[in-house]
Length: 548
Image (cartoon, rainbow, N blue to C red; front, top):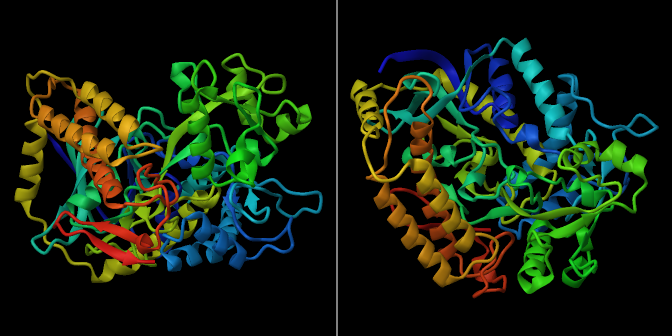
């Protein structure tokens, strides 16, 4: 393998909302910054797919709103499992970060008065979600991309990072990975490294996530010795598209319910108030379980979903505020002005992730994390609209901390490390019995059947067993060698990360003997006070807990 090498002060892994904001901040310190992404720059993250909005307590629509109310909603929504300091930082800094986005060129919807418009979202006491129609994330990414280009920050795309570079003392000094178009090793030497790789929605066969989200950042952090916390907390967005198969899991934004959309079962009943007095605007965990329950009890549609109906809304409201949804469904022959959408839950967001402090530092020297790659901000369940805010608040903090670290960072690269990594990847090419994509599918089915919306001890134990069987099969993977782009190699590398993270999610779900937020144990249906603590896992062994 040829080796291409980049030398930089700050390496940012991931080019979504958190990665771009981190890079912009680090660049302000006059440093060399490189952004690397597995897919195309700016397009392979989930920020660009986010539709509904960005929470900030400006109180432009509801004058009674405040950062304190936003904090209380975030903690209550998170089942009080949030790191309270991180949650406080989120709500206090979100408004200023949105104003910065506007200075980069982002346009948010406004009222007649000229002040920002704000819509209602699930689990929130007041209307505080700022938006641009139903394509808020896309608007943010367009502005962030313009700013990254204006700051002349280098971007490298289509490189899958396979491991962090570490010295004898465990300090991180960059990363290395495979150039997907050429299958060659690429090395990034850096004083500070930021993981902003998003989540792991593709552990499941139905997900709203971008194709690249296979838990790479969690695996990189874990393998480097970083703590991961609350990995059992996986949010299923209540509403994803159901068909055709090519659209399965594609997000149907919460803005549809925010604008007055109604959930109806196959018997024509509007069912949400049976489960929660807040109806369609209950928190995502509640709505997802309610829909799942309706389907499991035989009140689902032929395609295995429920209806989401906006036909009672004036057509001009749908055309203006839900334009993306209108086009998304028209594309498959459904006019949402005249007929309901069919929806079902879809794997959406990991509340858990790499443990960080308020400066986005991990427990590993020179390593930082931000956005969905980090855990603790959202607790057991994320409120819609808090993720886009999180990318900007903690992206900026990670960029600043990483920049300040550059002057004092020290690292000794061991060339043997690169030889080992190269050898490990070369060893994957072999004749075998299973293509990696087949094992990926097998893993996704295991996770969907036993580690999804409703969990039980026997199912979780069975899943752990199945995950270990898949890991054994990986020794007999069939991976043909070839020059240029090699999908089988990408699948194999992603599968290694997916199997590791699937195991951690399942182990953590077994440990938490209660139901809290997105984690619902049918055998422990109550939320228990003694479990008001985060579960911390580390590759060195012992499970630790942080009281909340």
